[in-house]
Length: 211
Image (tube, rainbow, N blue to C red; front, side, top):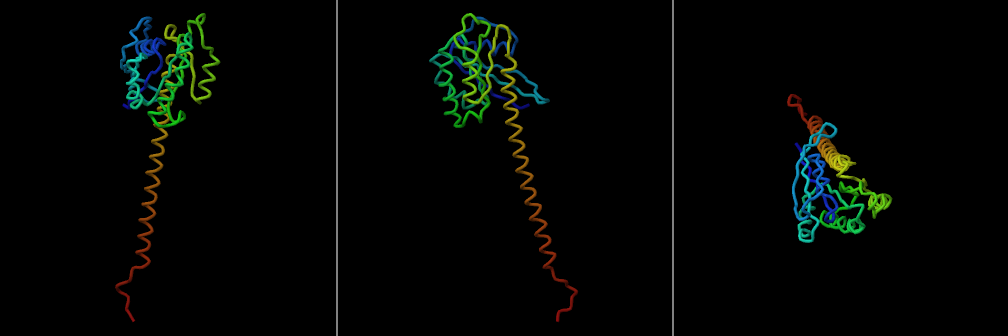
């Protein structure tokens, strides 16, 4: 079974742990220690393939920011989370995105990334409009969803979008490898037959009387 390392990133208190625990255990936790980093695992089936999804729930405190590079380096997919009730957490996503691109040394288009606006159940406290989230993700060329760990809105969709992106990327790589192997086999096949035909054309008949 293939494994997928998914990293959940964002400021403290945006609900990263609540999102992860809701997805893995289908439970909602209202209070969680923002200094705790934890790893969760869940077997996911998508389009007939099974994956062991390893979710790194990162802490958003300053103390753990230095560890981000390590998590990003090992990660294959990234969920960038902000709270719709915190404009600051939304603005900080740009820095997180830039850090991912710096560590991975690729463009956004090369990575499975999703922007998630969490706590959509707290509409009266909203500071970031849905349109702003859409505009940001559109600028980066990636998917955007608003979620609620409390009501379980779009939780599965957010995680499985990333799984699907990794699956698509993996299948694409396998197809390229398969084409490369087939091309090499074709070259070897042609060389073999060309060599064989050349030998046949230049081979002398031992029974022929030489003049």
